[in-house]
Amino acid sequence: MPNFVDYVTSTSFMNLFMNNDSKTLDFVIAHFDQIMQLGFRTVNGKKNLVTPCLQIIRNIRYPFLTDVYQKTNLASFLTNYPIHCRAFSNASHHIYFLLLPNYIYTQTRRLMSPFSTDEFFSSIIQVCDLFPANEFLRQTISTAGARTLSIFDQISFCPRLTQCLFYNELAIPAIEILTLGLANRLQYQVVDTLMQNQILQNLIELSMKSKTPEYFGFLRSVFQISQKNPSFYKAKQLSQKITEYKDEFCSIVLRLRLFTRISEVAAYLVIDIIEFDHIITDPFIEMTRRLVIDFFDFPAHTFLHQTVLSLFRMLLKTGHLTPSIISRSGLPMKLVDAYDRREGEIGVSFWAETRELAEIVNMFGITQFGITQDVWRKKVMNRVNAEMAIIQKDYGGYTPRISCNGSILDLLLSFIVIFVTFLGIMWVFRKRIQ
Image 1 (cartoon, helix red, strand yellow):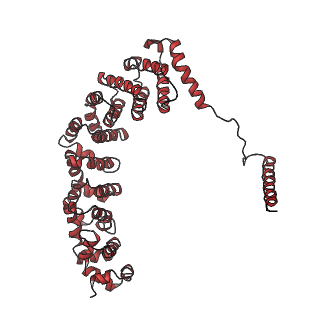
Image 2 (cartoon, rainbow, N blue to C red):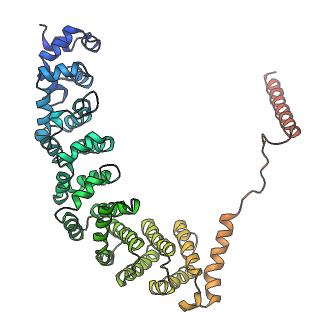
């Protein structure tokens, strides 16, 4: 049998392998442990040796893959790799998790027995903070068919993943994967898991303590499942449990000195809850008032502005926007002060959002907010109406253009103009040459 290094680095080796040369395939099987370690970067090697080994493991397909499984330690290597992968390089992680889908399925896209176990997926979940592992799990969930979902159910995939929510280093990656699961067919298993052993309640309490935006984002994703699928009874039960903490979510926004990502996600969660339960509470009014104050104090904070707009749009849509809420929020007087102090055109997006709020307030009798019609009209609505007229105006008037639907005469005249112009250009060009 030829020398391993000389043969693998020869110019003809890959051609023989790709053409299924029987002697070359036998050579690969005989030296597969070495090829596997070099290709997956679990041992160091020279580039001229590592590259062909990587090409081999990237291009193994059925039916040769069956022989490899039967005659080598490939299955053992693949199942044990996640357990020890933190000892390997990032390049090794990338190669392993990128190529893993090529090895774990049968020709009919069934998960093979060594990889359809609780132990295998648990070992990957334990390293889901590694980006390649996270991407592999996300891709597996996104493409999972009925058979794979059934296996996930049997091996308690979602319960294993949910446990990671309570471990700092794995919590955020696990949230990302579970959120993706909620968006596809895995949502039923995720919801079933959250229903067990007060997991959701523990998660809510952890969210309140940690004040991590990803937790609130996940709670919002869970809450929205029942809104998208009203017949999903278990999801509705989860939504009702989240609804019980509405005032606490309002308090989080109120306690934070500045409007942060946590404030944004918590506020949007409250907005969703109000749209669901239609119950306006004092903490919600206080949160609205605080957001209105911040809206005008931070004219460049677009995320804050969009949150305030979403809140008032929701109240208007659901019929819960009343003169009392508007008055307690302090919005009318804030609008008058803002337009009264307006200078230049700083904050274009801010004034666009302010116009919409002014139009919402204008739907109600302005005098009940302690502002006269004359003051409101002169300081606010005249400016709003003038800006809206500019926005809605078609600048430039009529622009002539060739239309396929125009008359034959118009088309003929257009072609004549183009032809005469072309002749003029050619005449000038020839004169310059002469």
